Image (cartoon, rainbow, N blue to C red; front, top):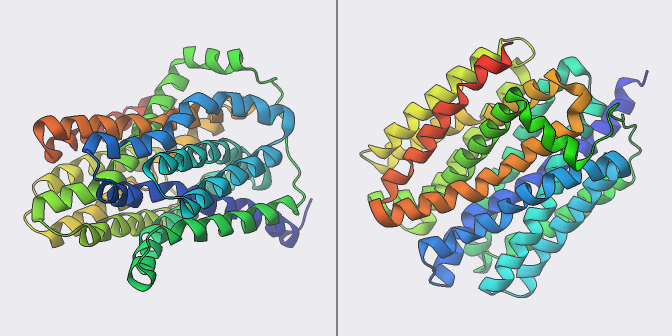
Length: 381
């Protein structure tokens, strides 16, 4: 049995990978600035998150199979390398096609990180503490996501160039990857050999299909909020893009706080009931945001939405994997594949915005939050 000190030496570099995972949320701020810099239509600007999140659908299952053979740590390191490459690229050359390519690399890297990091975290922590550590990992990711808009604002204010955030992210990726590379990790191997077909066959299981769809919608809620807060606030209240970007920071601050408390309390409470309550409250708060009468009230509602929705992903993920630990690699691949919701929901919201207006597009998020409640009936059995 390894002592606490030696466990910490392994856990810390694994948890730091969630800092790199959080870099994907820079797509929210980037969407607004790219729309302004290149004079893009709503549909063209929403291509940026699609370039990131479409890879979750394409690569998640192949990566899950690959990590069964190559090892989770090795696969995770390759994801960090892709992320670093994607972050350095727009700092060197800035154009709309290059920015799209950068987000393709970011999406590939983030897909690999998300598929490999959660099972690797499960290997280095106790089963009893897995839900808490999942929330802690998402708390760390939320800190990273929160810092993105703040770093961008700092770079604009002090150096006049928002793209310097990419340089910071690239250097950080290299540091985190190097630390993990130098850290020995004992990995477990699944009893069932993972293959592409065996992973897809799991979708025939009604439980698996339900939780995969839930993850799809949860990520859609998160990315839909992230990429549309600026648009909603500028249209509702006529504020500047920089002022509206504060809403994104508020949202990620709330996610960070929510996940911190989740890490503390989830080993002590009924997580299923918490999941139902959180998803219903999220739906109600989003409706309230659409009828907000002032920017200040909108900021408050955005904060509350972040608080209520912050733990939906780690709860569904950890509860699902705990029910089928022997199929962790495949189930992880399928659920991370469902992160493609982040590529589907924002363009759908963009299309609705063009036809009916930005407020109507947020109803997609309301419907998604209501659906997540239904996972309770499968997870409780």
